[in-house]
Length: 269
Image (cartoon, rainbow, N blue to C red):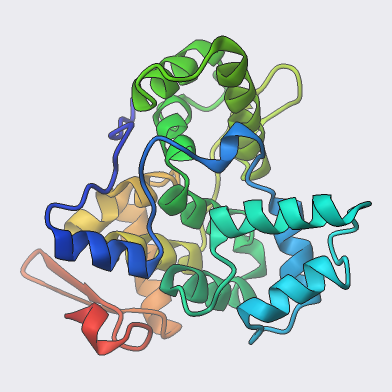
């Protein structure tokens, strides 16, 4: 059975590290968007398909509020959708995690369900708290609510009442269904996803930005969310290298990975 650390995937050790994580786009704590919404994959797809690939934060605000590209009935629901999408994804190319996700998004149509998941796992602590209860399931196993409820209770320190917990579980189960990790409506079962070279590159990049290096990058929670053994992910990383999305070398059993073509110099340092 696969296991991952269920809460606090990224816990800054110093004030400088905390500042760097926040400026890059990571978020943590005991609050999250899944108290009221899912991963909102359809809305994100509609927004990015409607917008220019080089859209600014102001552009995203304009097309949601003024153009109503999400098809919301009232101004208040447009504003709320903008707020929730911003919590999950930042919607700002000045935020490195979103900038890179958007770059990969337009390069890999088949990975457009997994790329937002990886970013949302970096930004929504409640979604992170539910990950172990899904990723540890075997293909074909029926989804059970209690392990997810227990994980959320632990992550939030028991501050949610039963009604709120039930809502978060429903939203999270829907999110994992949208990404393909679960299937079904009233009775959901686990299924495996098939990552691409580009979704693998983004998962490795997220681990890299938290300070992980070498072969350990293939074992981070983001890598585990790809449902693929490290040996297979390594082959996909080689494909990503050939496509120009990462730097990779192997010698004497040692793996070195870098992102010189994607990351600013200070982030590489």
